[in-house]
Image (cartoon, rainbow, N blue to C red; front, side, top):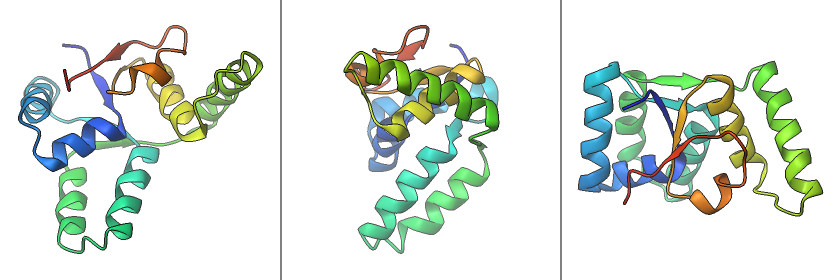
Length: 134
């Protein structure tokens, strides 16, 4: 197993109690001591919890995150992501700014991206994708 960046859809499955995803995240934590997630994924999960008015789940999520690593959108991530986005737009294959920033974060940090959204992320050359939901 390679150190990975966990995408929003996989982290959502973990939080919903998907046994297969929980097992893979546990395995990753045993090997590396933590999981990596983008600040974008943090935002998307928190946004969803606020939207659903999940006051009970919010502190649980924030505690879980405190044991793990949130990777920022650095200047380098922003530049790589902007380049990816421009190339995808030129080819009519846009995937959205959030997904592009998550992909850029994985590339800059030399991490595999763990996602179930292979259709979108598969458009990005050199991005190593793993699906723990299968």
